[in-house]
Image (cartoon, rainbow, N blue to C red):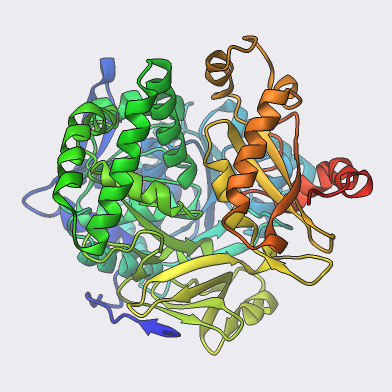
Amino acid sequence: MQELVVPPLVETPPQTNITDLLLRHARSAANPPLLSKPGPKGSWIDISASEFAADASALAKGFIASGIEPGARIGLMARTRYEWTLVDFAIWFAGCVTVPVYETSSPGQVAWILGDSHAAAVVVEAPRHENVVRQAAHQEGLDKLGHVWQIDGNGLDTLRVAGKEVGDAVLEERRSAAGLDSLATIIYTSGTTGRPKGCELTHSNFVELSDNAAAALPECVYPGASTIMFLPLAHVFARYISVLSVAAGVRVAHTADVKNLMGDLQSFKPNFILAVPRVFEKVYNSSMLKAEDGGKGKIFHAGADTAIAFSRAEQDGKVPLGLKLKHKLFDVLLYSKIRAAMGGNVVHAVSGGAPLGERLGHFFHGIGLTVLEGYGLTETTAPITVNTPKQIKIGTVGRPLPGNGVRIAEDGEILAKGFCVMRGYYNRPDLTAETFVDGWFRTGDIGELDADGFLRITGRKKEIIVTASGKNVVPAMLEDQIRADALVSQCVVVGDARPFISALITVDEEALPGWLERHHLPAGTTTAQAAVMPEVQETVAALVAKANASVSRAEQIKEFRIVPTDFTEESGHLTPSMKIKRAQVLKDFDSVVEEIYAGVKPLA
């Protein structure tokens, strides 16, 4: 199959905007809780739809009273918390456009985003964020930036007080002026290369995509369901799920610190979660390490193999009786404990941002947590395709959501169209023209549609490595397998225009202490020291050999180096959504790469 367009399930009136999704519930007799804020001693305080709408309206009146014009851009720079979503909706109630900024951004990045978008104001979380904004304004002279309000200060109360003089009719006029075609937000790509580009997403992108996703996923997103948000809301994936949850009547909690995630999961007990693949890898690896540390490693590995076999058999349509019995036993011994650690109620998880890997997908499905892997970009408001509980093939990223379409170009590039696709890049008509062909958006990813319309991602067009001999190599095929091991944090495959393929690998700082203890090696060994230890080298060599077995000889990693430091967002090697900045890694570790190819004879 080369093309699949799925017709919409829901038709939306053209004068609808995102605020209408909230007002549906706020004006209903049910008036359900849509958000929850942390309370004392691990408790949660529910906020009804009408309370949320009233507070968003009060802040919106404050924006209007402060002279913010209709359509003005307002920056939003904060960690994932209730107030992020509150301010986001307040901006829409005021008829304005939200410009999210990652709270980890540097003054230079902030200056570019606020300057390029011509932001009139910005809401920040804390003094440190305000300092960054002030530095950015001083460096670049952000002439249009007139206001900076701070959440942790009295910024929101200042807005509420200022807005008391603004009448309801004025607010309603501003709120209702936007329709489906109106601009809702400019999200700047986190940028693995070059300066971030501003993606113009409309109210249609969010409203029509949300209503159709809710219709396609009734088992996951429904009135009374709940989820906990821990991914950065500046990222399109979390932002879209946030709006979808409001549309569907799902109650959302927020946690700003992932270190508190397991405790928050256990106290809030969500029905579904969303995460990037690295989170699922961490859950698997921490469960495995905990079992091994407790002398139950054999039980874990046998249980994991059983879960994977059970899931594969179920997908094929027939589970043998013996496997059913083994699965039931391990559900008592192992699976129920992993589910309990995640709150006990999680049945579905939505994964995006990068490929999850078939083995991990089958493992979680086999323990009773179905991971619905999807695919999309900032330019597509997150999901183009997604697996659903009724239509799922593990190892794929699902079929197009209703209202979306996928086409495979002659060179294998994935093209997209439909409700999900942005209207263009802000202030970049040249780039917009390059990115669209006959009305289809060019994703830059390579993939294939199977006979049933399920999409499989096989690589990133820009990241395909072409060796000196002309062999095309998809780095993700090897990287995902090596990174799946608990000891490994990151893996970057190298070899463009080189005689053979090699890899740069980092050690996971969190997993290292337990690994050292199990191997009776000195406690307190640093990642830099571990990088040169023979035992670590041997372990990584075995992982490389295992990954090599899945590809042709020309694609195999012939040499690797374990580098002394990890690739992180702080080091400048990961985007906030945890994607590798490949060019930056190669630049910073150029001497290591040159040493591989200059003085080392490749393995046979």
